[in-house]
Length: 370
Image (tube, rainbow, N blue to C red; front, side, top):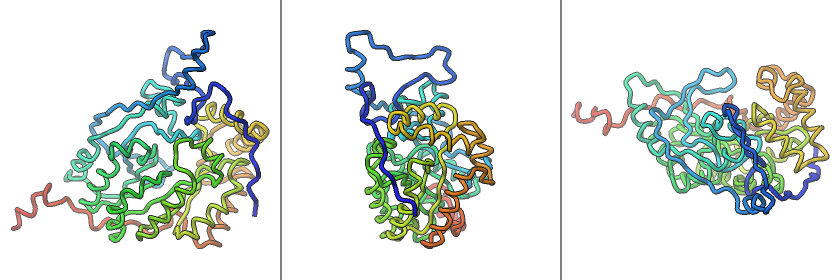
């Protein structure tokens, strides 16, 4: 089995905000004017970096909360995202380009200019009560993490779970946050009815690498602890090995799977790094700073997987694995999964749709029939 090898990391050089993943904050691709930070010669820029950009939250009032999709690349047709942007600051996050639609940067803005949807639970109850609604599993955590740090204050995720529980509606959750243990009292009874399953995203066991790639996400050990808490309460739980970055963290794949299986994880899945739109220059900028001796080799593997480009969804997300390195990761993953008795995430028994019903307090059926 391949063993993790030491990383040639550099210390964060001056001009990098502590606790943030992106190193820059370039304007979004739709903006006519481009922003560039320039020092005025009085060290004001350096002081600005030391102070850091404070997280700001804007309250959003959407008309709907359940998003439907027909994408061939995902295994679900509906999802909920209670927040836009994510304070975890994962440098590789494929959701970063969505901030450009808000007139903001996929860089620092994505981590610091957040949007919360406090009416999400109320909207959800209304949409699930619609006469033409037909239940299928709702995915939460597919775009940004619903359990990111600001949910400690807004608690939108807990409110959503209460609604889903009242409706007996199945939900699948993906998170890299240990905050999920706050809601065990809701998730455990739902699990008894086969209404929920949860996945914890773990990319590395190296705290130094995790802090660099995912600066405001919980440490790897806290994520394993959250996995154990889910398992101990009888909640079907697994791990997402995502993303595997060729030449950076993929050597840890088997050891992460072994530890998760030892805790009691029942299933697993993995993804390989994707670099759409603004994610590519942000990731490469980070990579050159933190793993300079291997940056060219890592990007070479990524481009080989994408037909010479930084990102090609037809190649990197299609059914056929086309590069040697990607095929090797796939084979290693399958061998480890079989050896450890882990199911593949998409092969699990479906959640129960038959229990879905509109609560009497909303439907009035209790009063109507006595």
